[in-house]
Image 1 (cartoon, rainbow, N blue to C red):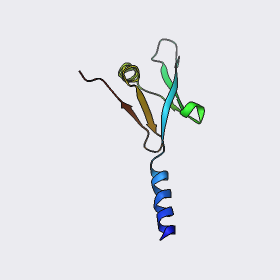
Image 2: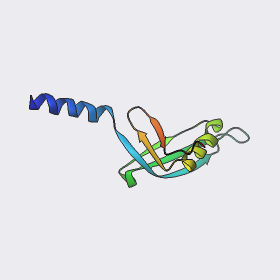
Image 3: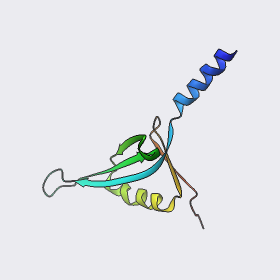
Image 4: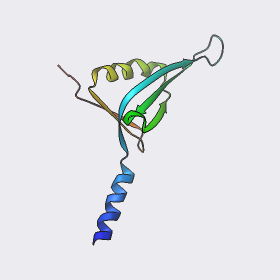
Length: 91
C-alpha cells in the first residue's frame, strides 16, 4: 500500500513540474538584415533553480508582456509548457 502511494505521488510530481517565474529577461536578435527578428524571453524560475527560453512570435509578445505586468504571481508548467497568470484584475 505504501509503495502504491509513493508511486502515485511520484507520477503526480512527474506530471506537474510547476515553478514560479521570479524574473525574466527579454531580448531581440536580428536574423537577416531588413527581415523579422527573433524575440526570446528567458524565464528565471524559482530564483534560478531552473530557466526556460520562450521564443514568441512578434504578435504574441505584447499580450504576453501585458499579462506579466498585470499578474501578481506567474507560474510555468515545465512539462506542459504552459504559463499561468494569477491574481489578474478583471475589473
